[in-house]
Length: 160
Image 1: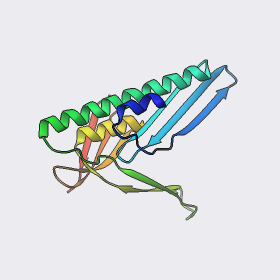
Image 2 (image 1 turned 90 degrees about the vertical axis):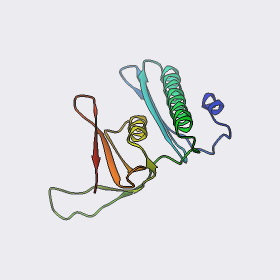
Image 3 (image 1 turned 60 degrees about the vertical axis):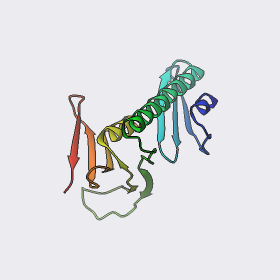
Image 4 (image 1 turned 135 degrees about the vertical axis):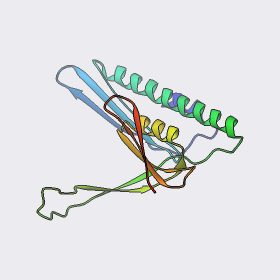
C-alpha cells in the first residue's frame, strides 16, 4: 500500500480493510477497502496466485486515486475554487426486528451527504462498486441519486 502514499501531500491516517481468500480451484481473491475522510477506495481481484491478486488490487487502487486526483484538479482549474470534501460517509446498523412480513428490512444505513455534482457521484459509485449512489446535489442542494442502467449508461433521480 506504500505505492499509494506518493499521491498524497499529507499521508492521511487510514485503516485498510483487507480480505484474502484462497479457493480450492487454485485461485485467490484479494479485497481491499480504504475509507478516507473524502473518498472510499475499494478494489477486489481474483487470480491463480495470492500475491498476484494483491498486486492487481494495488494497481486498481492506484488507478482510482489517480483518476480522483485528476478529476479534482480539473474541477479546481475550471472553477478556481478550493477543493470540497466530496463523499458520503456510511454508518451501518444491522436491525434484528422481525415484523412477520415478507418485506423484512435486514439492514439500515445512515448517510451523511456531502455536496457534489452528478459526475462526481458517478465516479464515487464506480469506485465503491455499487449500482447507485445517493448525494446532495451541489447546484440544487437537493438529494439526488445516480444509478447504473442495464444498458451500461447512467441515470439521475432528482428530488423536489
